[in-house]
Image 1 (tube, rainbow, N blue to C red):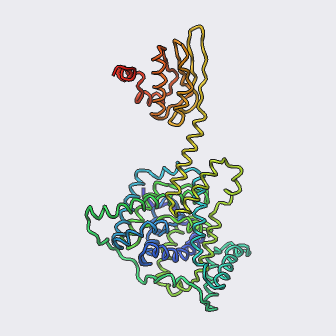
Image 2: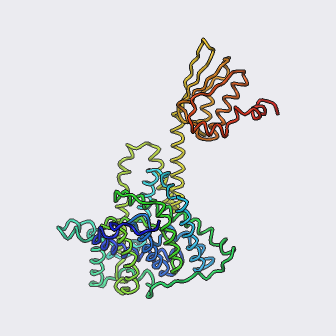
Image 3: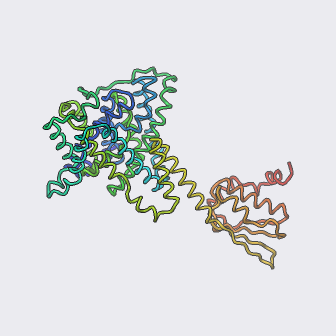
Length: 497
């Protein structure tokens, strides 16, 4: 199961993966520090987690080229735990989060991604693009004009550098943006915010440590209410990001293997003093846009991150935040599905409502899981309503045999069960009823109950009712849950008890 990927995943795009991984590593540093601050822990907790998670998922994850590290969505869920119980309980919760995710992988919960509609994915992507942009606004408020000038110059580097002949296609423009603006800032000695202002960088490599918490049921009851949501949000964001990278690279990935990989990565992070994390859509898109495709890019990102913060910290501290803001603005612009705006007129109203609702809920609550849940719920309701309208019944009277034949077409389930019953004429005086189910499917106990109601009502009127044409699937559920052919149950319903 957890075997190393094919040679192509590692050595098929070495130059592109190394350069892209370097860009991602630079962009990961301020985010890992910021997310640590959100969670209320030391910056090194986020940095160690980002290194460990990226490194492990590069080896055993199911989606080559995807970047996983400490994330804001996960950090928000940790705040209360850290505040009430401290870092050691956070590390224990991280371990349990990983265990739950590994179990999810073995239960093949990654396959549930097939239930998330394209409209929900689009809404999720657009919401993340908006959140990524909004996250940059604090760096652009109450600042000097130098910051705006540097940010605009950074965007200029990012979008114009690729047009330079030859070299523009070899080097990723975000990396050039970071190097150039750092050089300008140091040369002009600009008084602007830098990575060093975000927090103290670690000066040692991470070491193995077991969380200093008692191994008791009480500890489990403390961390489980945090670990369960962390596991759900982490898998949801990781699987959604994997789907997006699948589309960007026109390749497929193993979602169940990704669940296991994310879980093992979080277990590793907890044992090295890091917080729980998951896939990062912003960094993954930076990686892909910068030319990263294979597992090497993810490993390079994790390893370079650790090397830079531990051994090159004096240089890393000089990177102006404006350069990284420019990179993240590029990410938000590239992430947003502008095509979804153009397609509003062409797409069905229901699809537009699902997409817009997902965006609003995610942006309003900053809760990715809640937004996707609401989107999936809406999509399910719209689908059920649409399918129910395709159920209809034709009837014909055979005068010679005094038989009424009802020909049922479509899907009978909870949303169409009442309409199914309403299609029959119970007031007609008729001796024989044939219900032809050749073109119908019964899906749940609501449908079976509706069929029982129809048959029993006709029999109460003294009619002989026969069912014909049942397919195997419908026959199975009707035989198991139906009562119209059970004498004891019929006796109860028709007045025996």
